[in-house]
Image (cartoon, rainbow, N blue to C red; front, side, top):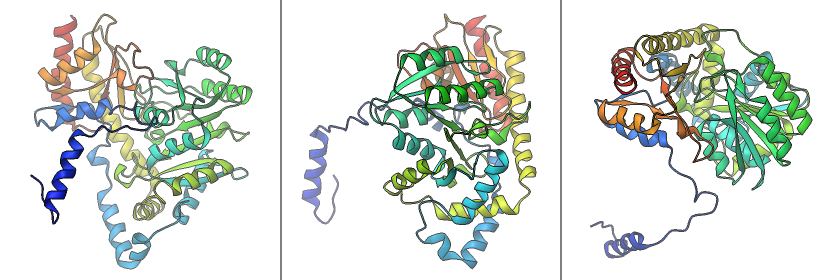
Length: 416
């Protein structure tokens, strides 16, 4: 029994809630909880080793420098960190980002503007909100990042997935879809170390995709949360750097470079699009966390950035190599995988006759190893998937060693 100063009345409300039938809006009634979050429930068991998350490595956080900056800020200028701020974002941070993005080819001063967002997720959600009406078509890679997919679904867009090849989206299928769908407004891509597959789109495909955008008149939403985390291979120019017609929205975040808890992302896009995003953000959260913005700015402008990025790359290179080594030496040879050149994930594929969902459930239930079933990232519910995703950034090296030995033995027992 629950009581407050109006105990009886509160009790009646609680009982009423039990029997009331809630009718949710059409925008959200079809949305389901993330399967990744459901699997993460198993990780409360201390015996479970989780390869299911996508968090930065704990040792990657620059905790000492963040503490120093925070202490200085709260001592010398506390009101700046505690007061309301403007929707566009903290001025010095925006100017730094414009300069940094200009160096990377991701900001064109003649037609672009930039806004700070509450993480990359909000950047993608607001971009969809300002550009698409219900029923408009949004194309994306298949599979793709579930957070963005659910954001797009919440606006009742016609979501269509395009199969991928080793070097990115299948251009032939993309153009076929463009020919057969006359109201395609946006193409959503994660060109660098894609989540969930870890694939990287080749430069030739980036150029071809941009040419298709010009020919078929649509916007490209380029999501690049992992671009600085390349630890193998050569850097490839962003699609945004190829943009001469104002057709590319570039979104990124400090979540993998400083802290995901900061919820500090940003969007570089043609100024008219940014202006609409500003208005939509004002009715969403007014502005992003100003303390985090100030700390992000001071961190990025007072450290040796390349030294910091190289430290992160070294951490993830070692973790990825460690996990891939166990796949190469211990997994059933019937399992194939994509070796990443950066980012946080490895995409493994089972034989077609293997029940992938049963495999993932058995791994966590019987072997205490959590992985993410690949259909968590599917565009269509009935889409067949034989793959699962592994994450190497979150677990400690000792956990990778122990967990991968167990998982390798499981694959041999089940498949060989």
